[in-house]
Amino acid sequence: MQNESREFKGLHAYFAENPIEAHRQFFEPEPGTSRRGFFTTAGLAAAGGYLGMAIPFYANMPLELVPAAFAAEDLLVGKDGLTLLNDRPINAETPPHLLDDAITPTARHFIRNNGLPPDDISSDDWILAVDGLVERPMKLTIEDLRSQFEVVSMALAIECGGNGRAFFDPPARGNQWTFGAVGCSKWTGVRLADVLKKAGLKPGVVYTAHYGADTHLSGKEGKLPISRGVPIAKALTDNVLIAFAMNGGPLHKQNGAPLRLVVPGWPGSCSQKWLNRIQLRDRVHDGPKMTGTSYRVPRYPVAPGDEVPTEDFVIIERMPVKSLITAPASGSSASRAVEVRGHAWSGDRKVAAVDVSIDFGKSWMAAELDDPVDPGAWQNWRLSASFPEAGYYEVWARATDSAGEMQPFAIDWNPKGYLNNTLHRVALRVG
Image (cartoon, rainbow, N blue to C red; front, side, top):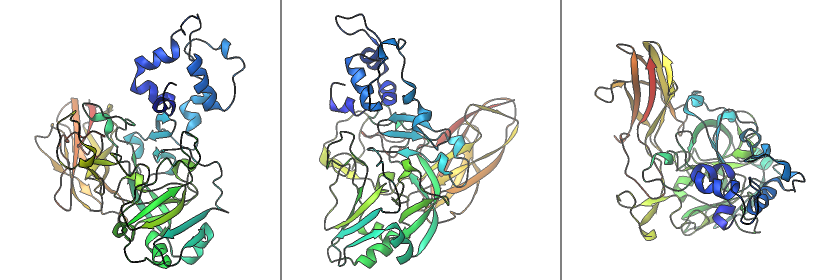
């Protein structure tokens, strides 16, 4: 790997993003040698870094072999059916048809990492510090959280701000999420608001700052992979949790075990994983992935490919209205009558309606829409559709929220590929 950005990129993402260059780097002969294969000088160094040890018989490896240790199933232990987008850090999404459950099972909740998870995730001696502009700084164990505050369980949706990035044209850099960087699991923990109120907010508090125990991909001591925060008004809402359980069991390691924030309706990056510190500040937090263009969009519409000055980007707060078709699966075959179903959500708002079209948007049918089971949960919907004859169809779904905002057919482009909420379409063969 010749530079830092490439050094920190996983093999899966590297090949997906630029397969021609990846093939040249890893499979073509080194200058002046006849040796080909993954293990050029650069490739061998990279492999050693991933595996943490040498490979004694690397010279015997077949041409273009990628070691089995890099296989997706070995990186996604405890997950079921996720698609790996990157292996360093691990990022994986869930195909829409595997998100059909009203409450997302732990095994099917997506993974979005910025750094490397801590090795020690024991809940017994985990400490959460609460400091900054507070009257009473605290250091709390998970048992302290359980015993000193009301424990609540809530279904809450988390969506990556880059969900849908794969569909921007021209392409935007970053993980090429399609539809599956979203989930709505049932989280158990305590309200962040209760913890902050016990600590006592000093005058002038504006923002929270969140810190986790994950380490930067560079391995440099003290360098954080991500540290974001939210305005204090958001932190004090009743459905922002410090969670220590997921769907009645422990948190999955890749989903933040043993302690994480859950901030529904806002970009998933606000929901700090491996949480070990919350700081209260008198200014907007300026931690890693909080400044520049990270999790920000232009304050005005821009043309595709435009260069936008950094000072013209604003922080993403609430996520836009969106829907997802989970059944039938795209590309599947169906009879002349089929139940269409899925989920819809809209930041801090409720979804007011979901409409479905089977004739490319000429007409729309209102779906049956459930209320959210908790404030911050997605809403489940369904509709019985009848197709007039055999053939190829597309099923489209669009949601409208309580403020009247509706999913568009196409979204304005932005340089970072955030907030893609175009209506969801699935292909269906009826016969």
